[in-house]
Length: 400
Image (cartoon, rainbow, N blue to C red; front, side, top):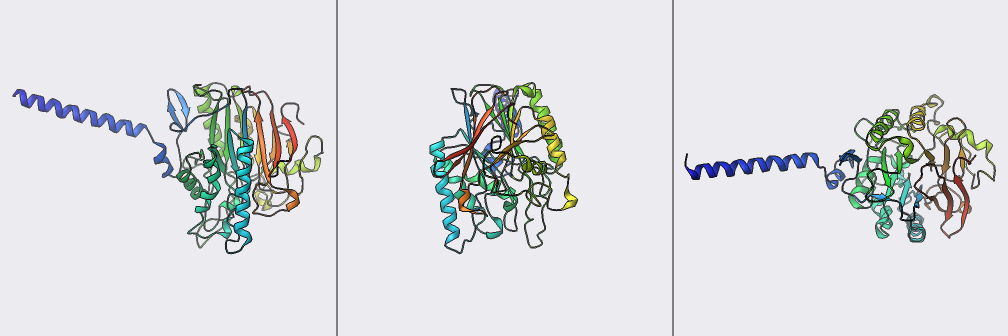
Protein backbone atom coordinates (compact mmCIF):
# COMPACT_ATOMS: atom_id res chain seq x y z
CA UNK A 1 0.00 0.00 0.00
CA UNK A 2 1.32 3.44 -0.91
CA UNK A 3 2.01 6.18 1.60
CA UNK A 4 -0.82 8.24 0.02
CA UNK A 5 -3.27 5.34 0.46
CA UNK A 6 -2.17 4.85 4.06
CA UNK A 7 -2.61 8.55 4.83
CA UNK A 8 -6.04 8.52 3.20
CA UNK A 9 -7.12 5.49 5.25
CA UNK A 10 -5.93 7.10 8.47
CA UNK A 11 -7.78 10.30 7.60
CA UNK A 12 -11.02 8.42 6.86
CA UNK A 13 -10.71 6.44 10.10
CA UNK A 14 -10.19 9.69 12.04
CA UNK A 15 -13.28 11.25 10.46
CA UNK A 16 -15.30 8.10 11.22
CA UNK A 17 -14.25 7.97 14.89
CA UNK A 18 -14.88 11.70 15.32
CA UNK A 19 -18.36 11.31 13.86
CA UNK A 20 -19.15 8.42 16.22
CA UNK A 21 -17.89 10.47 19.18
CA UNK A 22 -20.08 13.44 18.28
CA UNK A 23 -23.13 11.24 17.80
CA UNK A 24 -22.59 9.73 21.25
CA UNK A 25 -22.40 13.21 22.72
CA UNK A 26 -25.74 14.08 21.13
CA UNK A 27 -27.35 10.95 22.50
CA UNK A 28 -26.25 11.68 26.06
CA UNK A 29 -26.79 15.42 26.10
CA UNK A 30 -30.44 16.44 25.69
CA UNK A 31 -30.62 20.19 25.08
CA UNK A 32 -33.37 22.17 26.77
CA UNK A 33 -34.63 23.48 23.43
CA UNK A 34 -35.35 19.96 22.25
CA UNK A 35 -37.19 19.18 25.46
CA UNK A 36 -39.49 22.14 24.90
CA UNK A 37 -40.85 20.46 21.79
CA UNK A 38 -40.93 16.97 23.28
CA UNK A 39 -43.92 17.40 25.58
CA UNK A 40 -41.76 19.67 27.76
CA UNK A 41 -40.47 16.59 29.54
CA UNK A 42 -36.95 16.86 30.92
CA UNK A 43 -35.44 13.65 32.24
CA UNK A 44 -33.52 13.56 35.49
CA UNK A 45 -30.11 13.98 33.90
CA UNK A 46 -27.07 13.09 35.99
CA UNK A 47 -24.16 15.47 35.52
CA UNK A 48 -21.03 15.02 37.57
CA UNK A 49 -22.75 12.38 39.70
CA UNK A 50 -25.63 14.67 40.62
CA UNK A 51 -29.29 14.48 39.73
CA UNK A 52 -30.14 17.53 37.63
CA UNK A 53 -33.33 17.98 35.60
CA UNK A 54 -32.22 21.42 34.37
CA UNK A 55 -28.66 21.04 33.04
CA UNK A 56 -28.90 24.03 30.69
CA UNK A 57 -30.77 26.44 32.96
CA UNK A 58 -29.53 28.66 35.81
CA UNK A 59 -29.64 27.08 39.24
CA UNK A 60 -32.24 28.40 41.67
CA UNK A 61 -30.36 29.48 44.81
CA UNK A 62 -30.78 31.09 48.20
CA UNK A 63 -29.53 34.64 48.59
CA UNK A 64 -26.14 35.36 50.10
CA UNK A 65 -27.82 36.30 53.39
CA UNK A 66 -29.29 32.77 53.62
CA UNK A 67 -32.88 33.71 52.73
CA UNK A 68 -35.14 32.52 49.92
CA UNK A 69 -38.47 34.08 48.94
CA UNK A 70 -41.29 32.49 46.94
CA UNK A 71 -44.30 34.45 45.71
CA UNK A 72 -47.31 32.27 44.88
CA UNK A 73 -50.03 33.31 42.44
CA UNK A 74 -53.16 31.24 41.90
CA UNK A 75 -56.39 31.05 39.91
CA UNK A 76 -55.79 33.73 37.28
CA UNK A 77 -58.66 32.45 35.10
CA UNK A 78 -57.56 34.27 31.97
CA UNK A 79 -59.79 34.13 28.90
CA UNK A 80 -63.26 34.60 30.37
CA UNK A 81 -65.83 36.47 28.27
CA UNK A 82 -63.52 37.25 25.34
CA UNK A 83 -66.41 38.80 23.40
CA UNK A 84 -67.34 41.18 26.24
CA UNK A 85 -65.85 44.36 27.70
CA UNK A 86 -65.43 42.91 31.18
CA UNK A 87 -63.53 39.77 30.10
CA UNK A 88 -60.41 41.46 28.69
CA UNK A 89 -60.59 43.99 31.55
CA UNK A 90 -60.29 41.13 34.06
CA UNK A 91 -57.18 39.86 32.31
CA UNK A 92 -55.70 43.37 32.21
CA UNK A 93 -56.28 43.73 35.97
CA UNK A 94 -54.64 40.36 36.64
CA UNK A 95 -51.62 41.40 34.57
CA UNK A 96 -51.52 44.72 36.43
CA UNK A 97 -51.44 42.84 39.75
CA UNK A 98 -48.43 40.83 38.59
CA UNK A 99 -46.63 43.95 37.40
CA UNK A 100 -47.19 45.57 40.80
CA UNK A 101 -46.33 42.56 42.95
CA UNK A 102 -43.26 41.18 41.19
CA UNK A 103 -41.00 44.26 41.43
CA UNK A 104 -42.24 45.17 44.92
CA UNK A 105 -41.89 41.69 46.43
CA UNK A 106 -38.76 40.84 44.41
CA UNK A 107 -39.06 37.06 44.87
CA UNK A 108 -36.30 34.58 44.14
CA UNK A 109 -38.87 32.25 42.61
CA UNK A 110 -42.57 32.43 41.74
CA UNK A 111 -45.30 29.82 41.44
CA UNK A 112 -48.57 29.83 39.51
CA UNK A 113 -50.66 27.27 41.38
CA UNK A 114 -53.29 26.29 38.86
CA UNK A 115 -56.25 27.54 36.82
CA UNK A 116 -54.18 29.78 34.61
CA UNK A 117 -57.02 29.82 32.08
CA UNK A 118 -60.80 29.35 32.16
CA UNK A 119 -60.62 26.86 29.34
CA UNK A 120 -64.35 26.42 28.85
CA UNK A 121 -64.53 30.05 27.63
CA UNK A 122 -61.68 29.85 25.14
CA UNK A 123 -61.39 28.83 21.50
CA UNK A 124 -59.14 26.14 20.10
CA UNK A 125 -57.22 28.58 17.92
CA UNK A 126 -56.24 30.98 20.71
CA UNK A 127 -56.24 29.03 23.99
CA UNK A 128 -52.50 28.57 24.38
CA UNK A 129 -51.81 32.19 23.35
CA UNK A 130 -53.28 33.24 26.69
CA UNK A 131 -50.24 31.59 28.26
CA UNK A 132 -48.10 34.22 26.52
CA UNK A 133 -49.94 37.00 28.39
CA UNK A 134 -49.70 35.20 31.71
CA UNK A 135 -45.95 34.55 31.63
CA UNK A 136 -44.93 37.91 30.11
CA UNK A 137 -44.52 39.72 33.47
CA UNK A 138 -42.18 37.00 34.76
CA UNK A 139 -39.99 37.46 31.71
CA UNK A 140 -40.24 41.25 32.01
CA UNK A 141 -38.98 41.24 35.60
CA UNK A 142 -36.69 38.24 35.06
CA UNK A 143 -38.28 36.09 37.77
CA UNK A 144 -37.90 32.30 37.42
CA UNK A 145 -41.17 30.46 37.98
CA UNK A 146 -43.04 27.17 37.68
CA UNK A 147 -46.69 26.24 37.26
CA UNK A 148 -49.16 23.65 38.42
CA UNK A 149 -52.48 23.29 36.59
CA UNK A 150 -56.12 23.13 37.59
CA UNK A 151 -59.47 21.75 36.53
CA UNK A 152 -60.20 24.78 34.33
CA UNK A 153 -56.94 24.18 32.44
CA UNK A 154 -58.32 20.83 31.20
CA UNK A 155 -61.22 21.62 28.89
CA UNK A 156 -62.49 20.87 25.39
CA UNK A 157 -60.12 23.38 23.77
CA UNK A 158 -57.09 23.20 26.11
CA UNK A 159 -55.12 20.65 28.14
CA UNK A 160 -52.50 20.75 30.86
CA UNK A 161 -49.91 19.35 28.48
CA UNK A 162 -50.61 22.00 25.85
CA UNK A 163 -50.18 24.75 28.44
CA UNK A 164 -46.91 23.23 29.64
CA UNK A 165 -45.52 23.01 26.12
CA UNK A 166 -46.55 26.56 25.28
CA UNK A 167 -45.08 27.94 28.50
CA UNK A 168 -41.71 26.34 27.80
CA UNK A 169 -41.77 27.61 24.23
CA UNK A 170 -42.41 31.26 25.07
CA UNK A 171 -40.56 31.77 28.38
CA UNK A 172 -36.90 31.15 29.14
CA UNK A 173 -37.71 31.68 32.84
CA UNK A 174 -40.11 28.72 33.11
CA UNK A 175 -39.05 25.66 35.12
CA UNK A 176 -42.34 23.86 34.47
CA UNK A 177 -42.04 20.37 32.99
CA UNK A 178 -44.04 17.19 32.59
CA UNK A 179 -43.73 13.77 34.19
CA UNK A 180 -42.25 10.72 32.46
CA UNK A 181 -44.67 8.62 30.36
CA UNK A 182 -47.03 6.57 32.51
CA UNK A 183 -47.00 8.98 35.47
CA UNK A 184 -50.00 11.18 36.23
CA UNK A 185 -52.92 9.39 34.62
CA UNK A 186 -55.46 10.89 32.23
CA UNK A 187 -55.02 14.66 31.94
CA UNK A 188 -52.35 14.86 34.65
CA UNK A 189 -48.83 15.27 33.20
CA UNK A 190 -47.66 18.07 35.50
CA UNK A 191 -45.77 16.14 38.18
CA UNK A 192 -42.17 17.26 38.69
CA UNK A 193 -39.78 18.93 41.12
CA UNK A 194 -37.39 21.88 41.15
CA UNK A 195 -34.15 21.81 43.22
CA UNK A 196 -33.04 24.88 45.16
CA UNK A 197 -29.39 25.21 46.22
CA UNK A 198 -27.75 27.17 49.01
CA UNK A 199 -25.02 28.34 46.62
CA UNK A 200 -24.49 28.18 42.87
CA UNK A 201 -21.49 25.86 43.14
CA UNK A 202 -23.04 23.35 45.60
CA UNK A 203 -23.46 19.74 44.50
CA UNK A 204 -26.61 19.11 46.54
CA UNK A 205 -29.83 21.13 46.96
CA UNK A 206 -31.19 22.17 50.34
CA UNK A 207 -34.82 22.52 49.25
CA UNK A 208 -37.06 20.66 46.79
CA UNK A 209 -40.18 22.28 45.35
CA UNK A 210 -42.62 19.51 44.39
CA UNK A 211 -45.44 20.09 41.89
CA UNK A 212 -48.38 17.72 41.51
CA UNK A 213 -51.20 17.55 38.97
CA UNK A 214 -54.65 17.17 40.56
CA UNK A 215 -56.27 17.00 37.11
CA UNK A 216 -60.07 17.52 36.90
CA UNK A 217 -62.00 19.32 34.19
CA UNK A 218 -62.81 17.66 30.87
CA UNK A 219 -60.96 15.84 28.12
CA UNK A 220 -60.39 17.62 24.79
CA UNK A 221 -62.35 17.05 21.61
CA UNK A 222 -65.95 16.55 20.54
CA UNK A 223 -66.60 13.50 22.74
CA UNK A 224 -65.36 15.22 25.89
CA UNK A 225 -65.72 13.42 29.22
CA UNK A 226 -64.90 14.42 32.78
CA UNK A 227 -61.33 13.92 33.99
CA UNK A 228 -60.77 12.54 37.53
CA UNK A 229 -60.13 15.33 40.04
CA UNK A 230 -57.34 13.85 42.13
CA UNK A 231 -53.61 13.18 41.81
CA UNK A 232 -53.38 9.82 40.06
CA UNK A 233 -52.18 6.78 42.00
CA UNK A 234 -49.23 6.33 39.59
CA UNK A 235 -47.72 9.45 41.15
CA UNK A 236 -47.31 7.61 44.47
CA UNK A 237 -44.81 5.14 43.01
CA UNK A 238 -43.09 8.00 41.16
CA UNK A 239 -42.63 9.94 44.43
CA UNK A 240 -40.98 6.88 45.96
CA UNK A 241 -38.66 6.30 42.99
CA UNK A 242 -37.68 9.97 42.72
CA UNK A 243 -36.99 10.11 46.45
CA UNK A 244 -34.78 7.02 46.13
CA UNK A 245 -32.78 8.65 43.32
CA UNK A 246 -32.36 11.77 45.43
CA UNK A 247 -31.04 9.80 48.38
CA UNK A 248 -28.61 7.90 46.14
CA UNK A 249 -27.21 11.12 44.70
CA UNK A 250 -27.61 13.61 47.52
CA UNK A 251 -27.69 11.62 50.74
CA UNK A 252 -30.41 11.32 53.42
CA UNK A 253 -33.74 13.04 52.73
CA UNK A 254 -33.55 14.61 56.18
CA UNK A 255 -30.80 16.93 54.89
CA UNK A 256 -33.27 18.75 52.61
CA UNK A 257 -36.45 20.74 53.07
CA UNK A 258 -39.53 20.54 50.85
CA UNK A 259 -42.66 22.37 49.76
CA UNK A 260 -45.50 20.85 47.73
CA UNK A 261 -47.85 22.65 45.34
CA UNK A 262 -51.08 21.10 44.03
CA UNK A 263 -54.08 23.01 42.69
CA UNK A 264 -56.99 21.08 44.23
CA UNK A 265 -56.53 20.52 47.99
CA UNK A 266 -56.20 16.94 49.24
CA UNK A 267 -59.52 15.65 50.55
CA UNK A 268 -58.22 15.41 54.11
CA UNK A 269 -58.17 19.24 54.24
CA UNK A 270 -61.97 19.22 54.33
CA UNK A 271 -61.92 18.09 57.96
CA UNK A 272 -59.76 21.02 59.10
CA UNK A 273 -62.25 23.80 58.48
CA UNK A 274 -64.45 23.13 61.51
CA UNK A 275 -61.55 23.57 63.96
CA UNK A 276 -60.08 26.86 62.68
CA UNK A 277 -59.45 29.78 65.03
CA UNK A 278 -58.40 33.35 64.28
CA UNK A 279 -55.13 33.07 66.24
CA UNK A 280 -53.56 29.99 64.68
CA UNK A 281 -55.45 30.10 61.38
CA UNK A 282 -55.86 33.75 60.40
CA UNK A 283 -57.07 34.74 56.96
CA UNK A 284 -60.18 34.64 54.85
CA UNK A 285 -62.47 31.63 55.33
CA UNK A 286 -65.40 32.26 53.00
CA UNK A 287 -65.57 28.99 51.03
CA UNK A 288 -67.23 26.07 52.78
CA UNK A 289 -65.40 22.92 51.73
CA UNK A 290 -67.71 20.28 50.31
CA UNK A 291 -68.47 18.44 47.10
CA UNK A 292 -65.92 19.34 44.41
CA UNK A 293 -63.85 21.65 46.62
CA UNK A 294 -61.20 19.04 47.47
CA UNK A 295 -59.70 16.08 45.62
CA UNK A 296 -61.87 13.01 44.98
CA UNK A 297 -64.98 14.67 46.40
CA UNK A 298 -67.16 15.20 43.31
CA UNK A 299 -68.70 11.73 43.60
CA UNK A 300 -69.14 9.75 46.83
CA UNK A 301 -67.63 6.73 45.07
CA UNK A 302 -64.37 8.68 44.57
CA UNK A 303 -63.65 8.95 48.30
CA UNK A 304 -60.12 7.82 49.13
CA UNK A 305 -58.77 7.85 45.58
CA UNK A 306 -56.27 10.60 46.39
CA UNK A 307 -54.89 8.67 49.38
CA UNK A 308 -52.08 6.80 47.53
CA UNK A 309 -50.62 10.18 46.55
CA UNK A 310 -51.17 11.70 49.98
CA UNK A 311 -49.65 8.74 51.82
CA UNK A 312 -46.59 8.56 49.55
CA UNK A 313 -45.97 12.30 49.81
CA UNK A 314 -45.94 12.19 53.58
CA UNK A 315 -43.94 8.95 53.77
CA UNK A 316 -41.11 9.70 51.36
CA UNK A 317 -40.77 13.51 51.35
CA UNK A 318 -39.06 14.59 54.56
CA UNK A 319 -39.06 18.04 56.18
CA UNK A 320 -42.23 18.93 54.27
CA UNK A 321 -42.85 22.51 55.41
CA UNK A 322 -46.32 22.76 53.83
CA UNK A 323 -48.68 21.61 51.10
CA UNK A 324 -50.15 24.60 49.26
CA UNK A 325 -53.31 24.69 47.12
CA UNK A 326 -55.66 27.08 45.35
CA UNK A 327 -59.06 26.17 43.81
CA UNK A 328 -61.25 27.55 46.63
CA UNK A 329 -61.04 31.29 46.00
CA UNK A 330 -62.57 32.40 49.29
CA UNK A 331 -60.01 30.73 51.57
CA UNK A 332 -56.50 31.83 52.53
CA UNK A 333 -55.79 30.08 55.84
CA UNK A 334 -53.21 27.55 57.02
CA UNK A 335 -53.80 24.63 59.38
CA UNK A 336 -51.99 21.49 60.55
CA UNK A 337 -53.51 18.20 59.42
CA UNK A 338 -54.00 15.96 62.44
CA UNK A 339 -53.05 12.51 61.06
CA UNK A 340 -49.84 13.11 59.09
CA UNK A 341 -49.11 16.32 61.05
CA UNK A 342 -48.30 18.19 57.85
CA UNK A 343 -49.25 21.86 57.46
CA UNK A 344 -51.66 22.83 54.70
CA UNK A 345 -52.08 26.37 53.32
CA UNK A 346 -54.45 27.91 50.80
CA UNK A 347 -53.15 30.37 48.25
CA UNK A 348 -54.67 33.79 47.75
CA UNK A 349 -56.95 34.22 44.72
CA UNK A 350 -54.78 36.32 42.39
CA UNK A 351 -56.82 36.62 39.21
CA UNK A 352 -59.71 38.96 38.57
CA UNK A 353 -61.26 36.08 36.62
CA UNK A 354 -63.12 33.25 38.28
CA UNK A 355 -65.78 33.40 40.98
CA UNK A 356 -65.45 35.55 44.08
CA UNK A 357 -66.32 38.82 45.79
CA UNK A 358 -64.41 42.07 45.44
CA UNK A 359 -64.47 42.33 49.24
CA UNK A 360 -62.25 39.23 49.38
CA UNK A 361 -59.49 41.11 47.60
CA UNK A 362 -56.90 39.85 45.12
CA UNK A 363 -53.30 39.04 45.92
CA UNK A 364 -50.61 36.45 46.55
CA UNK A 365 -49.07 34.27 49.25
CA UNK A 366 -45.44 34.91 50.18
CA UNK A 367 -43.18 32.25 51.70
CA UNK A 368 -39.79 33.26 53.10
CA UNK A 369 -37.08 30.85 54.26
CA UNK A 370 -34.79 32.62 56.72
CA UNK A 371 -32.05 29.98 56.59
CA UNK A 372 -30.97 26.93 54.61
CA UNK A 373 -31.49 24.66 57.64
CA UNK A 374 -34.40 22.34 56.72
CA UNK A 375 -35.51 22.27 60.36
CA UNK A 376 -36.05 26.03 60.53
CA UNK A 377 -39.50 27.51 60.00
CA UNK A 378 -40.92 29.40 57.04
CA UNK A 379 -42.58 32.81 57.32
CA UNK A 380 -45.74 33.14 55.25
CA UNK A 381 -48.43 35.77 54.76
CA UNK A 382 -51.01 37.14 52.33
CA UNK A 383 -50.28 40.32 50.39
CA UNK A 384 -53.07 42.14 48.51
CA UNK A 385 -52.64 44.09 45.28
CA UNK A 386 -52.83 47.40 47.17
CA UNK A 387 -49.91 46.39 49.40
CA UNK A 388 -51.86 45.41 52.53
CA UNK A 389 -50.69 42.28 54.36
CA UNK A 390 -52.51 39.85 56.65
CA UNK A 391 -52.64 36.29 57.98
CA UNK A 392 -48.93 36.05 58.86
CA UNK A 393 -47.82 32.81 60.51
CA UNK A 394 -44.59 30.86 60.92
CA UNK A 395 -44.66 27.31 59.58
CA UNK A 396 -42.51 25.39 62.05
CA UNK A 397 -42.72 22.66 64.68
CA UNK A 398 -44.55 25.02 67.05
CA UNK A 399 -47.33 25.76 64.58
CA UNK A 400 -50.62 24.13 65.61
